[in-house]
Image (cartoon, rainbow, N blue to C red; front, side, top):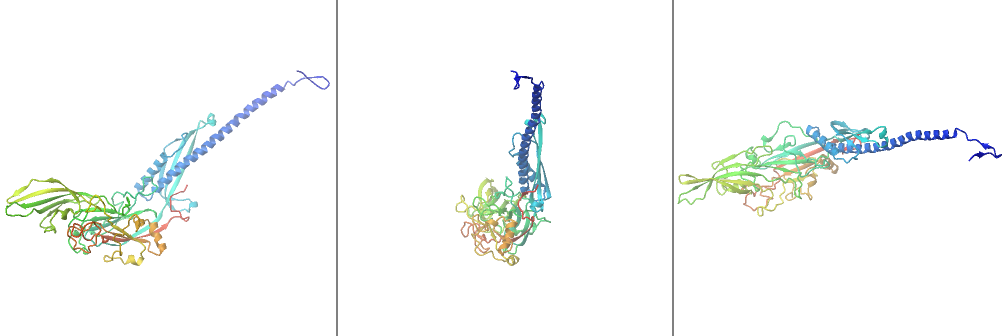
Length: 518
């Protein structure tokens, strides 16, 4: 169709019209390329921002996890913090598109928090990681991109100053008190009150003892945070003061105690073990062997029962020590005379099984036989019903006391009135202070009391058979007067001492918990 004007004159179409359309199309294509590139870049950039945020969250959480266990300047704790942070990062849920390399984790025992968090010195853990992610729209230009993230978390160093004073003991047993730190739980977010650290000089700080020979050399009080639960342990050595004279015992006692710990047998009690509704310091039972030699006159006219003539005992050893064999000839064993020269004098309330009997040795008119017993202590088991447990209590934690009361503690100080049966059970009493933190003890000062607790320990076992001449005869064990173990149990003076605490440091913003600092 030809175009005409108003007068009917034909109009000619410009020859350049079709060329202009081609230019427009070309320009549109040229404009679409950067537009698509910009859209692709925007989409991929948004993905990178999200992936970097995911990676940042992972390193931050890993750093927090590591810092939560980084509580002291030791290589062991540092290695633990690195391990926890690494494992936490490796188990982080990240987008599948991220190809993540192994994290880099470092610690700093003198790191700092940032100014926004009040500054302050902290144990810090830094976690860094790099990941590669493929582009989508922008892949025509750049196939992949790298995202990196780094996070630092700090555990503020609070100066927790604890001191132990007036360490006393009034018992025939040897008693040594130690401080230990309740270990972290497996997830690193709390504390495991069902576990105690392995016994070593690094893990257990010697507080004091009735046995002078246990005193260590120079010690360094471990560094701990204000909120770190502190356990108190008692190493109880049955009749241990027969080795180092203790004027407060007053008698020579060498029998087994009421739950079967033999002479010189050692057992550990721990204040922090709050298990299954039981009171603090529950401890596993120990096994030992004892060989009792008996001699009998075989004369037809004798009529005498076999007499114990020698005892070979391998008592449970203290943690980290090798059991030592002890031989008692009847001539120097204090309980050799009747009615004490019986098996119960050597095994007390232990559960014993005969595992061997020697052939008789005949010497003239006498016959000697060695009988080997394998025994297990029966801590807290009722004598009347060994399958059940008695409510023995071996620790009472006293709080709300004045500084003058603490300063006045001596060996002759009476235990708090009415504490028998009022030990630190899990349902009340002083359970919250069975493994106190310095923050807890320091808070007591706000009530007008001293920032301290007094720990009154008893071995919960009494003394040996018939040895109730060591008074007073108050007891916890489920036994009758005259039975093995009835005696000084529950006096709560096997070992007692005051633990005083002060907290200093932290940050000007009041941070005491683990926080992100970068």
